[in-house]
Image (cartoon, rainbow, N blue to C red; front, side, top):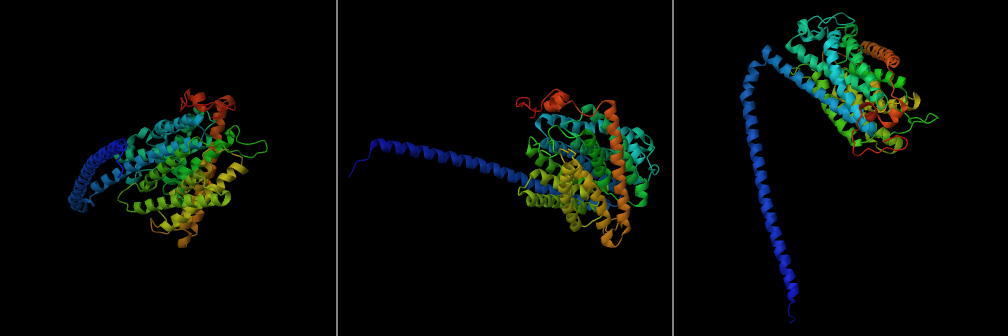
Length: 490
């Protein structure tokens, strides 16, 4: 029998003790982990007990008091504010989406634009825009909304407009106005002067958006002939989209976007993950945009509106994905995200008036419209729209208005379209759509032309090559990682 090697035995013992120690440490760590898990489960258990007790305690109170006007009004006030907060969060989505699609050297400039949308825009809409749009009054209480063309009272939220509900309603509408301005920012980014942007922000929030909004929501002539636009396919998105079309047309394309033969070049963005995150945030905020437009939590239609909103987004993303796959063989996530947004824009107007199956169909068509319109704007019109705002908001805003006249089924407020045998509603919706195009593009063209004459629209070529972060703001979004190439791209 061969004697064991002492050196090997010593090595074996060393490995044994090492393994044994590791096992003991693992057991100790597992014990600590299990204690943490048990603690977490204990907290969750008592949380569930608390929620059950809360529901049981409040249920009889709610059943008894729900018919009380004060109780119902407090619930509606709360829902209106929550919806306003959700729509405000959409500004983060716009910022992330746009900054991801554009180049790094202009990302800070775009963030600053979006920040000023709700800063300067909020002040302007509070002082002037709200009065022009709603007469500065409380529509839910049946107060005077102004005449058929424009509101005329409640400037600076004065007079009868200075009430609790009007304050919440104003906050909600400020977020809508900011969204309309943000749409334009997406089309003119990377070459528009920041001072010009501030001037156009004032004009959109005090004149262009409020006046069309009054026509369709504030008792104006479009609402009186029966145009329906529940949450703003036309009032917000089509108006913002066609002002964007005018601005992008007058600005011209970015340097290097088109070859001498007119063929467009791809200018890649700096962070695709921003695009996806921004889209998710926008979808989340859109629940407040659409469902919040009931202005009342006691309107149980909000559940259908929320479902329609989500289904249209999913359908838009799906149709855009398959269309891009069929054309290029590649699933471009930027087009998929914009397809989802196209579906959302399209369902915004008809969200309360249609059934979920119709919302899916509207969203599917919306995704296709975005892709087709994006190619048309870029290849045929030769208009440079970096984020795709024109295709997404202008084209699908019009589709959303028309969709009301096709798919409205009479289940909400008695609004019916073609599928319910009413051919007249589509004609009425067409008037609203044509008015949105003429008003938004016409006033947008005049506005940007005046700004161009006053201070100039476009930055100098050397500033554009350097990037607007440095040229307009004197700082880079990523100062430690900035790299300059010979052609000025970053």
